Amino acid sequence: MSALNLQNLTVMRDACPVVDSVSLDIGAGECVGLIGPNGAGKTTLMRAALGILPHTGASSLAAMAPKARARACAWLPQAREIAWPVDVETVVRLGRLPHADRPEITQAAVTNALLQMGLQDFAKRTATQLSGGEQARVLIARALAQDAPLLMADEPIAGLDPASQIATMRLFSLLASEGKAVWTAIHDLGLAVRYCTRLIVMHNGAKVADGPPRDVLNPALLAEVFGITAHYKTTDHGPIFQVLDVLE
Amino acid sequence: MKLAAALTLLVAALFAASLVAGRLPVGPGPALAALWANDGSPLSAVMTQIRLPRALLAAMIGASLGLSGAAMQGYLRNPLAEPGIIGVSASAGLGAVIALQTGLAAAFALALPGLALVGALVATLLILALAGPRGAALTLILGGVAISALASALTSLVLNLSPNPFAASEIIFWMLGSLQDRSFEHFWLALPLMAFGWVMLASTARALDALTLGEDAAEALGIRLNRVRLALVIGTAACVGAGTAVAGAIGFVGLVVPHVLRPFVGGRPSALLWASALGGAALVLAADIAVRLVLPDRDLKLGVLMALVGAPLFLHLIYRTRGALR
Picture (tube, each protein chain N blue to C red):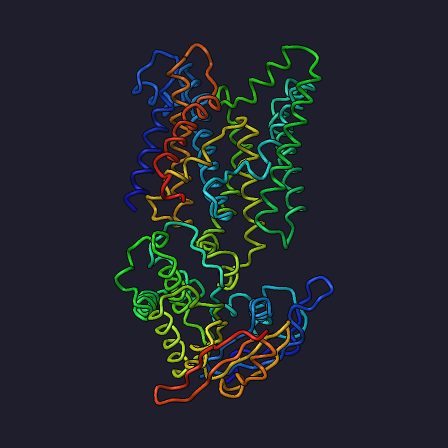
């Protein structure tokens, strides 16, 4: 079942396309990584797919009414904003806003989301007094509480400690195996290779590759898109991807 | 809920105190009895026609300023926002000043609040045109600052061209803000507008909570930001425009009250709405009692006292929370 379908999605900034006719489909059970250098158009693509940026082409999410969309997709923006000194549980509970008609399961969903992010002991702490990484985990928990078929996250693990990065990616991969779809922009190619079932590569606004990590991250693409060389090996500990050098 | 009960009790107590505070040497018991009896006696007339509308207006204006301040801060995610930021109070003031200057205010009792409302409406239309359907929060602030500046400049121009010192001093005294000698006509003029404003602002509660996460996340949670902005601007304009029209400019309520009460509601913007409405009502009632008690013979203006109390209070709060604002 498709969780997201884009057809020729294009976003123009003045006369220049920052997302250039991107088509893709993300299905239930997939954990898809969106990779590409800075400025490749990853964030713009995701925001246009949600319908919160003006665009041409079609997106299954953008076609929905705001309320229906909020139940179909949980969006975790890159900017980590918690404007007021509310407690962690209150932040996570905001994820239940689209489900105001089912108040009886609100508490269970919030508790579960806190547990999934290892935040059960933080519930009553003031969110704005936590460290940046802890706040990031609180916001991920908020998106999890929304309990939508598709989780769309923009660099959710940037700035987290290694254990939290791995735990978050493992959780995303688990959610996918349970039948949800996850689409996450990510810069850590090593983690992307280990936990994503599929990678989509953006370069200069266009989708240049889409497939299993092993096929996508070939030396030619790495040189062309990222300007790097890397070591890729499948081992007993799973696939290992290590960046080696920058190409001149 | 303890906070709601405490604030409600406080407002009720201050409302009663406002009814019995005044220059007539009558005890609270007989004064309230005369209000209840409404039998046409002089005391009863004072109570029903002077003190009751005054107390009602103080509570309504305070509630309006507190509520719109909380909503404005929630929408802009900025604790320094206040309802006057969209330029409505300055423009309503301009309308009132024109009414005073042209002598219309002396000709018809309601010409002054009426023209003030026209000023507020013009400002509202301007800000909506500027910060239209796709306008950002910043456009709203900058547009409001520009409109405020223009209205203040025009007010100064009217003062500048004022033919005689009496007109000028009348204008200046009006601009200081007061609830003295307001009647039920003022009450009935303000009530429908404010009630409409309260409904509009209350409708933004869920959206303001969602905006805690920023505009992107709120939109993805199903919030229609352009509708929220429309409700916020129109609701604030109705509340503040009506308040300024009947009482002149009363500052600091919309800024200080949400700031003081925020910790008591756990920071939640939606809970801060009703709390600030009650807190604002209590503050303006208290200040309006104080102007009658502190200098009973000198007609101390409500707006002056509010700024005198509000500014140091605000300084104290900033001093205390310096660390948390970082």
